[in-house]
Length: 325
Image (tube, rainbow, N blue to C red; front, side):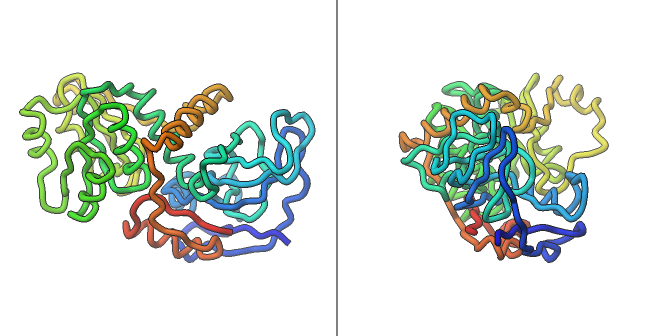
C-alpha cells in the first residue's frame, strides 16, 4: 500500500499526517512514479497555511521530486518504465512514495545527478534560472542584491551568478549564514542582524545603488529593497517568507526613482514544454559542469514532514532540504 502526507485543515506543521492511499494506474498523458526524493519548499508552507488556497480538503502537497517511472499512460511519448525523472511543477502530490502526474511536467534526470540532488534543485534551480536569465537577464559585471542568500534558492543563485560573472550581494540573517553565502560565490555579503542593508549597498556601489533586487522575504524587506534600487531599477518580489506584501501605494515607486516591480512565478516561465526543457537543460548543464553544486543541508524522512516544515519556518535550515520516502 502506498502512502502520502496530507492535511485535513489549515494550520501549523502539526496538521500534516500520513495516510495510506492507492494511486492507481496512469491515465492518458500521465506517468506513475516511484518517488526517491521529495523537495521541501516555502511554497509548501503557503499551501498548508492557506496563503495559496487548495481546491478541496483533505489535500496533499508538494510540487517537486525525483523518481523512477513505473508505468506510462496512453498517448505519452518519450518516457518508459525505468526512466529516471524529476519535476518542479504540476498538481500537488509530491509528498508520497508513489504518485500519478501529467507527463508534461516531467523531465529526464541525467545520470550524473542523484535523485536527492534532483529533488533539491528542480524548483529552486529553475527559479534561479528564470530570475537571472528571464525576469532580468543579468549581465557580466552587473551588481545585484539577493535576500536570503543562504537559503536553498540563494545558495544556488550565488553560484550561478558567479558563473555568469555577475556580482551578487547576498543578504543573510547571521554571520554564519553570510559566510555560507560568501563561500558559495557571493561577491559581497551583508549580515542584516548587525548591518544596515541600505547603507552597505550605498558603500558597496559607491552611491550608485542597484539595477535589480531579488527579494523572497516579502513584507519585512519591501521598503529596504526599494531603497537599494537606482532610478528605473527593478524590484523582483518572488516570495513571502515574512508575509505577503500588501497595501502597496504605487506612488512610492515614483518617489524612489520611477521604479519597476514584478511578482513572477515559475509556473508562468515553464508553462510551455519548450520553456521547461530549456530551463532544465541550462540548470543541469550548470550542475554537471560543477559551476553549481547542490547544497543539501538537511534530510528528513517523508513521514517526518511536519518536523521539516517546523525547521524551515523557524529559519533553522540552510541550503536545500529533501524528504526521503
